[in-house]
Structure formats: C-alpha cells, structure tokens
Length: 545
Image (tube, rainbow, N blue to C red; front, side, top):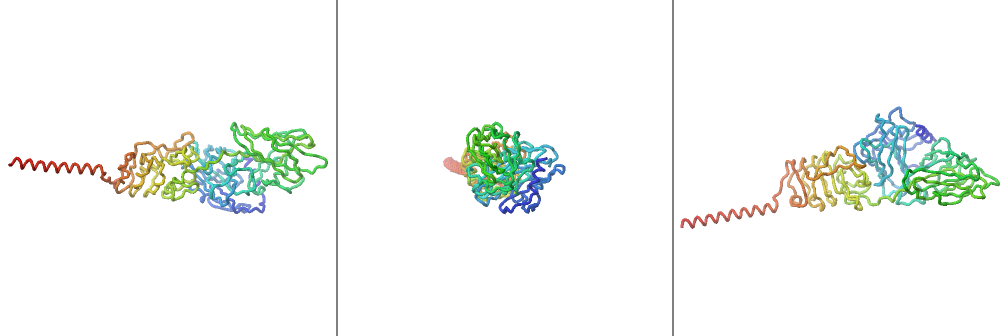
C-alpha cells in the first residue's frame, strides 16, 4: 500500500508545459472519460476493447490514485485485446497497470499473460497489497498496437486498471533495434528517499523509483536543473540526487536479478558532478557483467549517459571502478535496465485468414467477427502466441505465416446466413452445428481444398478447459452440421466430395440433390425394365403363334 500512496505523490505535482495531445491514457473500468487535476484526458475503454465488465475496487482498498479505483475484468473469452491507435510511425512507450484491490471479494488475485501484436510481453502476477505495472518500448509496425490479456489459469480472470501509450522522439534510445522490444525491469532514481518520479516530472511518462543501495551514501547536488542532458532526457530531479561510494578507492557494485533465465539486457546509466570541486578529480571505469564499457569523468551540472548491451545469466552486474588518478569516489545518479526481447514475430496470421490488429470485415475471420454479434469482441492476433490461440480456432503455427486449420463454433448462438470465407483455404475442420444458421449451405464449402470434416462438433464449447496454458476446445471427428435452419439443396460440391465427411441432420428444409451416380443407376434400371417388357411381349407373341 505504501507504494500506491507514494505513486499518488507525483500525480499531484504541477504539470510542465508538455504537449500530450498524442498520448493515449485509458482509465480501465471507468464509465466516462474525464480530465485529471493536470488537465490531461483519461478515456474510458469502450472505444478500445469490446469485451469485459467494469468493476469498482473494494472501498477499503481504494488508493488515492483515481485511475486505480476501477478496473475492467474479462471472464468470458480466453483472449481479450485493446486496440491502441498509433498515428506516429515511431517507437512507443506502453504501460499497463494492475491493482486487484479485492474487487470480487474473493481475496484471490489472479495470474495471466500480457501480450502485444502476437508476442508475449509478461506473465502478470497480481497480489493483495500493491499495484503492479509493466512497461515496454516498442517500435510500432502499423497504425495500431494490439495489447491482449490472455487467460492462462483455470478460474483466474485477467483484469487491468490503466493502459497508456505515447510516442518517443526518434533520437531517444538510439541503440534500440526496431525488430525487438525493450521491457523495463528496473529504473532507479538513486539518492532519493521516498518520492516516485513520473509525469509530469518526467515529460515522457517514465516511472523512476527511489533507491539508496546498502553501503552507499546519498548526495544531493547544489543546483536544481541540468544545463546539458543525455539524449534520453531523464528528469532533472532524478539526476540532481545520486549515491557515491564511501571512499575514493571503493567500488560501486550494483546487481539486478532476473531469476535463472539467460537473456539480453540493455542498461543506461546517468552521471553528473553534483558539487563543483576545486583541485579534485572524479574518474571511474564502467563494466557490465565484467566487460569494460567506458571510462567517465562526470561534469558539473551536465548529465552524461553510458549505455551497453549484455547477455546475462540470471543476474546483471554493474561495477563502477575508480581510476588511479581519481580523488573522489565513483558516483551514479540514475539507471535504467531493460530486458531485450527475442526478435519479434513478423509473420502474423495469414492474410487469407485475417488481417493483423483490426480484423478486416473483408478477410476470413473478419467476416465472422463482422457478421455475428456473438463474435464482435474478438480482435488482436488470432494464432499468436501459439499457447493463447482464440478459443474457437485451431492453428498450424508451424507454417509461416500461421494458418487457421479449424473453426469450432458449435453452440455459440449464431444467427443468419454464413458469410463468404472461401479464401481460408487451409481449413481442415469446420463446426457450425447447434446454432440458428439459415439460408442455403454455401457452395464454396465443398471446394475448400483441405477440408475433410464439415461442421464437426467441439466438446463443451462453453466450458473453459485448462490444458497447459492453452484454452483450446478440441474438435472431435464424426459429427455434423446438424441443428440449424439451412434450406435449399445441399451443393453437389459437398455431396460429391469423396474426401469430405459431413452430416446435416436437423435442418428441416434441406434437400439432397440426385447425384450423377444415382441418376446413372436409375437410368440403367429403367432401361432394364423396358428391355424386360419388350422381351416378355415378344415371348407372348411367339407363344400365340
């Protein structure tokens, strides 16, 4: 709770003159949009996600941060996605925040996955006592970013309290590659005692947590603003405080834990000389994971940054080692540590099956989402990541791009005619039984080149079944297109397709056409009957004679 209260402090600060027109800030669970004390707009989430329910945090757990008093919870689908517009073609800082607050009265905070554009971002682990947040820097690939919450635990429902995105200047973080994302792991304002820094102190909305590592002493500069700053533009208030070693011969050792996983990190360190010294020298070398990076001489009232990438095995270690000529101890004002993602997936689900981000009403799955009211909440990447595929689909993720191989929509209450999804040519299984579909059965179904089972049933479509982090409803063979309101003739493309297993019982107005084989048999029978009649007549004539 103390972190929540501290977080409220920097929201009460007076705003700088910062243009925030292109920021997007969503107060998840709020019924209306509004302006906060700084005059900044917070949007309700109705325009960015089509699923979920708004909830109030229990009054006894409410914090002083207005946006944490509500949340949006997702209890129906296995994956629920926000679509965030990205009008600028640049890198974005995106932050998602979660505050359980015992909104459901069950005292059971949930765990779930956070995803972006078909990539895994983080496993969100919430708790009873504090909010948690996840932050990344990401180069957008189009006109929107899809942020998804995926259910991975039985009876644990994803929720979210706040969601924010803002573009960053192109010159910031120049070492960052566009095909990777940076996930913020640590960001410390060294030497600060209690106040968490954020917007408006940081014009780019980054959160800086106070820290004084054991064995180091805090230092505060005798100035209040920086003359020359780093290209990453950290807030002045984070740079004017610092920590230094106890003596000029001591080393500063900083460690950042990541469990036992091998990963690539990026670290940004910020330095300044806090007090103008005469006859003194401060000089030290910087190493990251025992690899030399640079040597620096901090300058009075100027901010210098040093960045480095390093492969870490569980722990990232930073050392500041004084040089022989240094008469002052090593010092550091602030640090950022990012975990660098693996190369991001570039192969979104095939364009034949859907379009990335916004599901186009003209492409494959988009036809279903556009046509049927029961499916309008589905958005985001359908087949990626491969452990959180849409629950009514099966995908072949070995293909690049991934392909949809099964549609399982049994018992979804679908009404109306089937749309044209003939371009989904990787489909092997289609299940539409036990709905209220009407009109004629489309001719193209029998022409899908890989289709083997038409409208097989999916077991227990409305009961979530947890299977190793994947909610998938397995299609079982030998079922049917039954129990709809189809009418007219079954297309010959279906009835004459020998590789297709189909059943259409329970459609009262359906008719079967006579197959060519049946017509041939009938013609043969008629011919034989005529021949017999003629033969009998001839025999009778002969007998009379």
